[in-house]
Structures are given as structure tokens and as C-alpha cells.
Length: 383
Figure 1 (cartoon, rainbow, N blue to C red):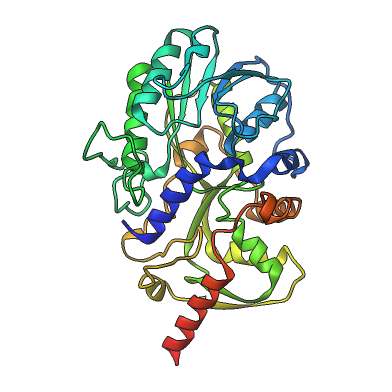
Figure 2 (figure 1 turned 180 degrees about the vertical axis):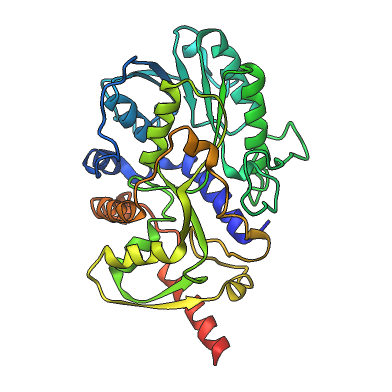
């Protein structure tokens, strides 16, 4: 497993588990973020949507997008992550593991047009919720990950790319280096499909970014440019780069509910190839702080096995296909993307609204000490 691939898996899994680090201030700021690409109009046929999760990162964005369209929401979670969010929305409390406490008993009654499962990591638990809800829902949307694909991923891989397979189908742990994450996601997809054949929507996001992101990956870059000085940047400006703004993903998920669209979809963008240099330029323009760039080649970074830059992957070796996934299917169903410049600006503005780091500010995914170390190594090599 490449370093960059491992970082994506670790941080994606961790974001779902520790989303509460942003604090309530982060969630509140979502309402002040830039308006979505399309003006929110009430849906012609309001839907009843059950969200398994709902208070982490993607969940609140789904709530905002669905509420703007006039849909009725129910949230199911443990009530531990930002429990004060959404006081006017129906909540069902429990645990995804049916063997823990009351488990999913609170979902034994009620009917919904769609379920959006953004908190399922283990197939046994996804199977339990999908089987319980199958007679009473019309559509089950499972949020998977592009990590579900077998490594190394090919260039421009689509939804028919071979999936990762668990060495032990019964395993229920991520593994020391999160080596089981991709296989578990693939197994969760299968569990949902078996419970609700013909009624499942499998969504495979890449890096989800934007305001309220607890991972500190994408956020690192606009914040680092705002700090100024000499900035180490990996790769070259022409390296391909893919992300999905959490608000764009949420709006598209609501659209999939409204149209009752089923199938498998890579959920990342933009629509056409975006160069890494455009992201860097957007970060530079987002602040008036002076900075200089030191570009560090992929070949050099590939040898730095003890650290790596956040969110960027080397367009080199086994990770060459990582930022090149095909999103054609999602685009055909209506997925749209706001400019990366807007995502950068909104992310930086949101970050500045947070409390101090000691009280809950998102911890950036790369430290000043790490950057200084990489810069020194690169300069020593050149010397």
C-alpha cells in the first residue's frame, strides 16, 4: 500500500470516528458558507429521508441540502457527536452494532423514501440496518469510498474496476495500517445490495473537503498559505487532482433521492481534469500574505516513507491512478461542482471562525516541523 493511499484511508476512517473535534462553532458556520451553485427551491415531491449518522461532516451538509429542498429528515446516531445540532429534527438514538445496548431497535418502526448511510464501516452492521429497513424504505444509499478498489488502481478507473477483497470476511477491525478499510467498504456495499437488491445506490467519494472538515487535510493548504513564508509544495503543477466539496456531494445525494437513482457512482470532481497547480494558485490568491514556493519532485517524495504531504498523491508509481478516477456516471445523473477557488476561500474563512486549537480547532494534517524537515532533506539532496 502506498503512503498516500494509506493516508487517505486512515484519515477517511478517522474523520468518521472523530468528527466532533470541530466543535459546535464549526457546524454553525455552515450556514454562513457561500450559497450552493443552484438556488435552493422546494422539491416538487418532498421526501422522507433517514440519515444513519448526520452530525459529523457529511451528515450536516446533507441535512442542510435536504432541508433547503423541503424534505423531512430523521437522524439515527449515538447522540455523542455534537448532540446539540438540529434541535428541530427528529432523532432516533442507538448504535450501529445491533449487539451493543439497544442497537438499532429505535428503527423498528417508521417508513422513509430513502436511507442515506454515511456511518457504515462493517458489513455485519450495514446488513443489520439494511435488512431491518428493507420492507419500509424505497432506496438505500450507502456512502462507500474509492478505497474500495483493489490496489494499485488503474488510470481513469471507473465503477467496474475490481474491488478489494478481505483475507478474512469476518474481520471487524481496520488493521494497524488501516489495511482492511477498502475491503470492508467493498463488503459493506455487498451487504446493502443483498438486503435491498435493485434499490441500492453505492456512492464512492474521494477526498471530501470544504467547511467543517475535521480531517485537516485539504484545510492545511489554504491555512498554510495564509501563514506565508517559504512553502514546500509536492509534485509539479500539472499533476492531476480530484476532490469533492462536501456541499456539492450533499446536494447531489439529495438529487439522487428525489430521482430515486440507483447504481454505483464515483463521487469526486471536478468534471474535467484539474491540475494541482490550480489548487495551489487558488490558495495563494485566497490570502494577502506573501509566500514563496519550493516544489519538491514526486520521485523524491516517494522515498520519504516516514511522512507525506496531506491530500496530494504522487503522480508516480503505484499511486499514479489515484487522482484520475472517472466520474462520468455521476456527472450524467446531475453531479455539479463549484470552483475550487470557492472551496478554498470558504474553507479558510471557516477555519478562522473556530476556537483555539486547545479547545477544538481542527488539527492540520501536516506540521511546521514536518515541512521544515522535508525542505531540509530536499535542499541537502540538491546540495
